[in-house]
Length: 304
Image (cartoon, rainbow, N blue to C red; front, side, top):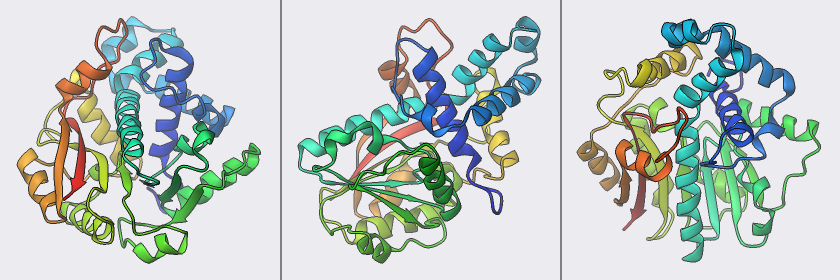
């Protein structure tokens, strides 16, 4: 992110989830709270920026839907912005649900951004402690927004300001009520922005003090991330947009490389979803533009 500014990526992701919840059917992931965390002006500005930028995304679509801003927005959102935030959230929360059935009572969201899980599930107030970790600027932005819309933070939600890309502090987690017990972590939309050594160190810090059976869901880019153009150039566009937004992508992995990295922290890959599998699970038989993003995979890794 740019110095002194909250994460643009987190706002655009929230916009995509809000748009999907309100406009797309069938729903892949229903984040009905996302629209509450975006002001009308922010929603309008993101919409306008996307529509005005259609020439960047696709000149043929710009010509085809010239003058039809709603169809242009639908195309950009469904092709470019929404597929990954929707499917990875759906997968992550499905895994979390299963982990809770196995006794998990702690959930740590790394790079939480504008995540709404705790607000969408008030029934978990006495069953799950939720720890949201993010950069201090992004987290302050979110807390201020929650105040502005008079949304009370549930007692089981704990906000922890930390730039974990620089230095992860396990003690800070403990200071906020975290206990050294079986835990579920999520790291969505983050690995791309970490150097390989940074991701390796983060995994070591996360799992050093938690017991066997603790696990994590995260997404990552494969070897094609910086080479493949993707459908309508969307992979290439994603990388360019991240750089322009002040959050350049840094790393991609082969499966074997990732497996070795996780092994260093005592983790085994329990489940791996390729783009083809993600498409089959979450985008099958749709009649709109939504399809799984090329080069992006999901992993559920468990501590031995």
